[in-house]
Length: 242
Ligand SMILES: [Ca+2]
Ligand SMILES: [Ca+2]
Image (cartoon, helix red, strand yellow):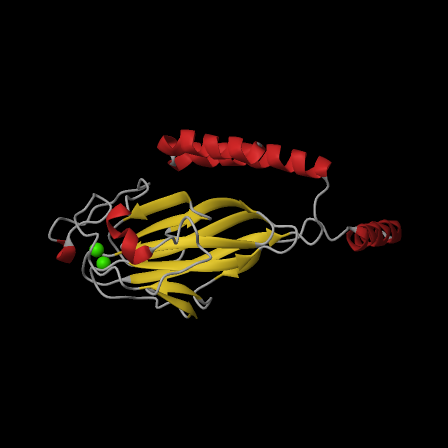
């Protein structure tokens, strides 16, 4: 019995030593954006997008309360003067955008609103960014102008309603762009964006390995829910590789 105790003590000491010696990598994910994070905000759209396409049902649920998941990227050309260059030149915002401010978790019924979160990815970037969203009724998400996800559905806004892989963020300032949709009843929103901020920049060798791994993960995600974006994602991956 005493021998067992001695062996167990030795084992515990070895495990403790190993844990102590483990380097700081990989870091654990941290929350980058939540419901209290200030963002740029544009509430000037009103109902201008209503009934322009299936992603924007007409007001008052008079055209139904559809589930569209995933939703294709909406055509926002008819409201380009209201939104300005928020997707293509996100560092400059027209007069409809407020400065960084608390984002209201509900907004005028039937209307659409746009948000830009400015995320500093630091000198080495952020890996494995994930988004958890709850929304009443719909949401469309871009990262640095590249469309990532959209959906609309009946029901209240509960965090985790949608869980989406958003890929990696390059070093420096990044822009997470969101359009919120409503078509009646109530509106609501909740968000949590997480990712692993790299404290040490990867070497060229590490980078090559990481990208191969990430591409595999992206492909898996695409097959689960976004088949029709496969070509688009593949194009982006090729651009990334270039
Ligand atoms: Ca609407
Ligand atoms: Ca609603």
